[in-house]
Amino acid sequence: MLVRESVISETAKESPLLMASTLKPQSGGVGRVMMAGVMLTSLVDAFSILVIYLLVSSSNSGEMLYISKDMVLPDARQTTVLERTTIVKVEDDKYFIEEKEVPAKSLVTTLLDIRETLEKSGDKTKESLTIQADKRSKYSLLNAVILASSHAGFSDIKFAVLAN
Image 1 (spheres, rainbow, N blue to C red):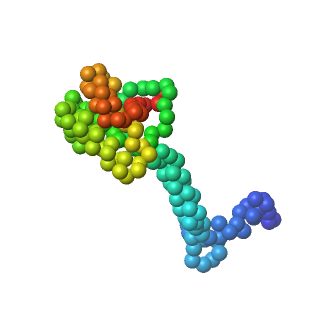
Image 2: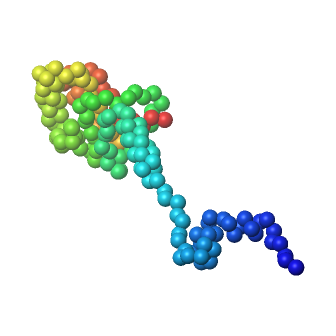
Image 3: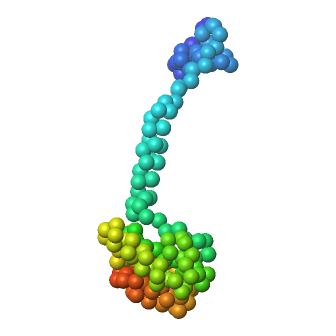
């Protein structure tokens, strides 16, 4: 008497994956490996689009302030987008104008020279000045910068802050 195998076992014997098995090839020949190739082109395209999007969205203002790791900028509720202006940095009781250290006595003359240079170049930001200082800075240091900038003719004085 012949025992008929179930339908599942018959279809399993005819399965292309079982026929190509390397352990027990059913095809009678040498077993070959069937592998599905992963198309990396579409993945590379997707990742490159993602990287471009992240680069464009992260540099929306175009300007960056270089803040030392010890400096903590003050928080503010009302802020505007940072524009390129002359930057005066107050750090460790020293004054820096455009990353160049300036003694406190020559702060007015240096700002006057910068203002004259900006007027000659026809720059529209000639009346703007950005002060970058730690929120723990002394009032006397900040007041010296404000007085010197007003003597030099800078009418628009802004502080670098962190937006809430």
